[in-house]
Image (cartoon, rainbow over all chains, first blue to last red; front, side, top):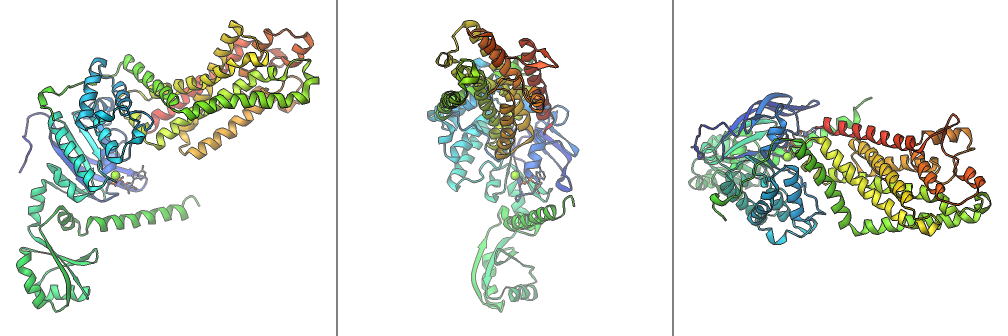
Length: 336
Length: 286
Ligand SMILES: Nc1ncnc2c1ncn2[C@@H]1O[C@H](COP(=O)(O)OP(=O)(O)O)[C@@H](O)[C@H]1O
Ligand SMILES: [Mg+2]
């Protein structure tokens, strides 16, 4: 199911076998995908999956090790300036000048991008109104909350009418309410501006705002499809049970129901076609006392788990230990 | 939410020399805006030279009145104090590029469709302008230390301190391309700026020095900013030939006294070389 009309215009983003290594860390290991103009395309994956590195290659800040990438029809290694003229960026970490006002930040951006002076005031007003910051235009950015700053960054990223807007973890560090309001802005802006949006997130629930999602893990795209198709592919409900004896429960599930379960986040988790109907049988036949049970429809969390074998939080924890190990090696090994 | 029809669309033109000039100008303007918004920085920039000139000057005067041939010591060290005030401010101006990196703003500038050189030049001119504002404040105090407000004197000193501000800012930006932590940056700058100050002859005449000091003094770029300023000041004073000989001997290379224009040229050339290195460093970094 493709939501976006398939047009004859060239893809907004076209990536082939892109890789990037930092020394012996392979951050991105050969990703390929295309993004249609007007689409909202999401990269979903745990911290350290290589999402930011991919974005940085697409916006010409990092040179790819191998492979090719075209953004708005331009080569990211050979036509850097042309790429830069046609993209907007909202980085993972904030990049506003706190000592300047909201308006001064936007004006500076407009001047750097060489926008026609006569058009700047009206465009600036439109952008600030769209993110509800027009009233605060003369306040220094230092006085803004995290959500307001993000909105201002989004307005700034769109200031020069880019064809593709890149958003790297646009909602990271914000509270859930602010996160969903940021999403409302992004979707509304995408519609009025007719911009292609490429975004990354590690919040599973946010990926559902996208037209298509690529799930990334350890530098590779594991699967790429619409959120609905991904969930349909899991095709089962998730059952999580808490027991007094997890080992026994795993054995019991395997022997009596032929179900393969895993222990994730302290709960025995498995998938069955219709969860609610299964629960009574489970209590009757498992042979291990159950203290709590939770049945849920498939979510993107389950999709991630289905394709990678771990929850996104576990994946982050293990990649953190991986990083620590590398750091340790660097510290103890090094030049000696 | 307005309909798609009345969205104002703008376009980003291909790069031209005019768009580069606009980029330089806005980066320069940002430095000024930030300076003007920062009251604390303005206050310190007013207080610091007063401290140097009147406290240090008056204190030293008590020791040295015999050796200055009747010339007020504050008058003598005036050019040196002006230089050090400009230098410190230029150093802090250059540090702003380290802050920009730390607070992420550098990235906003680095991904813009303009040359890196435009950004570095804008930064450098902005820092130099702010630093020379400091020089102007010291220049305003000239009368208080018996330096006459002569238009030629003011113009000459103003030009020289502008040159110095530019060179030190370029130097700081060159260092900032490599040193990314604020603390290390300040440490390195201090380690270089303080000896530069003490070796330059800002506080003493540069003739008859022990030979090791004379050599270091001639290597120190600041020497070539202080000396022409002092020459301008002394050319506007009514002092005895002996005093002139003792206090304003001029910088010599193997006995040859350098003309002021050449000294200014040395400062300018150094600044341009360091600016070129800074541009190269920022252009090759990802
Ligand atoms: N500049 C760099 N130098 C060395 N390693 C890097 C650099 N940038 C990213 N990495 C490594 O590449 C991997 C992917 O990082 P990143 O793209 O930031 O992941 P994500 O954005 O998905 O969290 C991580 O292991 C990270 O440590
Ligand atoms: Mg990231």
